[in-house]
Length: 570
Image (cartoon, rainbow, N blue to C red; front, side):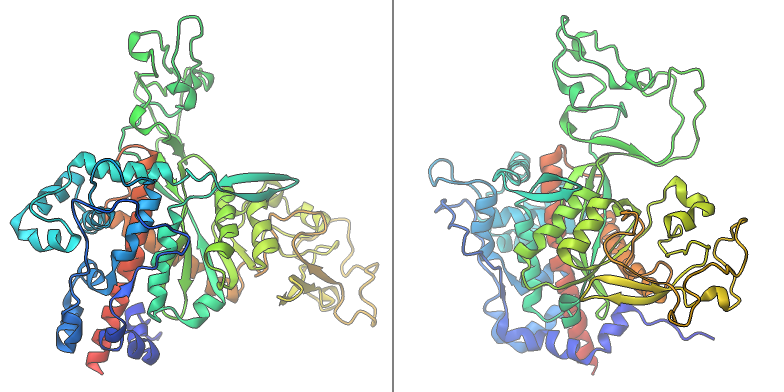
């Protein structure tokens, strides 16, 4: 009978070093944790604000008994006490693009940040959070956030905060160069990642991460779909649908090009943009995994003779976030290092490769051991980046090809459908491990043909055991030996893996990566971010990045609480 599995909470409670170093009493002298302001960030040009955040619990920090009571608080209430957000003010002013102290007197951007985080943590919409902010029951939160004298922001003010953060995320024009074959592609850098880097920096002020997690890092890139606030009308909408359509130059209909009913765009309602488009979510796009039936009047209805479509399917219209997660296998939690937000239909491999290339700038002391992800990342540009730039092991699920379904081709190309080398006579080679220094995987046949083993692929024209095999002689004690580096001998990289698929190491690492990304997905669903409550790419991007920051800080608060509770028990 198998012993019951230990939960992550139980494993951390049994970790003496974690409990002794991360409980509230041990951290008391170092509290509050200061939000780090990068030296290159200038001071905010605004000198006066309609609100002003000041860390509220300085007086309580001198009393260990009071600090110990914090362990009963929620994640959000605890992180408010753990972190002094004053250093975030110049960072937000920079990200908002403020360059002059003249003009209107704004609210403190830290007040806005905490307000939005409060809204996310409580799964409220914007109007609910503003209503609660003015409610006497939540007067303490309004005071903690820095609001005073009953002066609170409007819904337009919150929209401005998110929209401006999102718009300015790419304002610097900084790019990262990604190799895609012989071409060099430029991918825009998101300045909002600065918030994530600083949140991780705060978490690292408390030794909740095991040393192995940072010095032999397991990175887990992934994509999560977020439905747009706008309701989809046409699945074929593209940028051209938002261009004016004068009579002399009518706009083309991408839906009709796909043999669907589409829209004629011949009415006044379609003059500026197609009436079937979603102008408040211009960058949102449709992605589907299987087809679905359409109503007769739908612009997506096929005009072809065969209109039969599959009844089942999953479809999304909106955006895709691409978090780069770090898993801590020992402490059994994960956090987001960097992120990106794209339209839902765009592939993941190029922007995810760009995130990997940014690690050396944001986390220069991070040492990456392996990168694990699903088949959506199994393209050359991503696999090459992991191998050539991170010098890390590739644990990426296989992206299948038609040739994988024909075993008779495996001996010719030299590997099977899982990336295991196959000799010319159909025998599978055995793994002898990955040489990290040389970055190559050694394989040997061990003269399987002389050991009476069955070939992986039995070829009709071959006599078994094959007498013509040149590796049966005594001077080849291991038979045929090959080293696989970045690519196979045919220059293919699609199935090259530095950890054999299905091996014990693969089974240990790949599920950890899936748990890391699924944990974030579940948190975002709990916060109501599977369908975004805001319109437009700019606001959606800002909200997703702020949610990632909140996720990191909430993880810190949760782990500190666990360590404190375990310390009280012992």
